Length: 229
Image 1 (cartoon, rainbow, N blue to C red):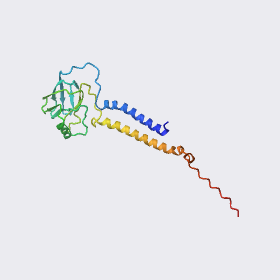
Image 2: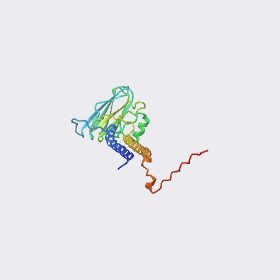
Image 3: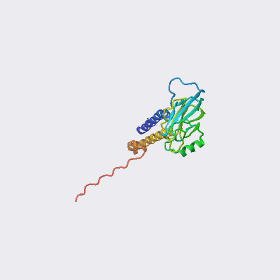
Image 4: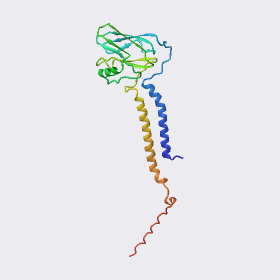
């Protein structure tokens, strides 16, 4: 039967396994992926209009926040102010740009990840600027304005085949993996340390007496008689 320190270590390892099972689906949902909301959805492959307005207050306002994979989406951006903008849609599902990114960071990203659509919005008040794209596979996609100083205020989410919900992390898709790994490693280390400390304390009581190992105990030294003057 396992000794108490071993049982404690096994119990902690069991807790680590249960935490992993419970954390994986929770973190996966909180990261980006959202379960499609209930209700009737339009059939895929249809024409959709995505109307967007921009103002000098540096905000996007969109007519819809969800399309279906394969839809032909027509984007019309209306300029209500007099400041140039872009409406640039990321091609990467489930990725949110860090709020610390600058315009140069966004430009660098889009130079290696071609946007699904990139509408250049001029400064003419009342002007309309258009673009088209085919709705991507199921996921949540972020759109931004790449003009200097406009991000992160000018950003939003478009769901394809699902409600966009909200993106809860700015650390990229791998964050949940590191969180789960850290929890497991921490619990394993705690189990090992606990097992060592408890085992050390109980070690003396578990040792075999010398006679059980075939050795004779040393004879006791007789006490000297008291000295009489």
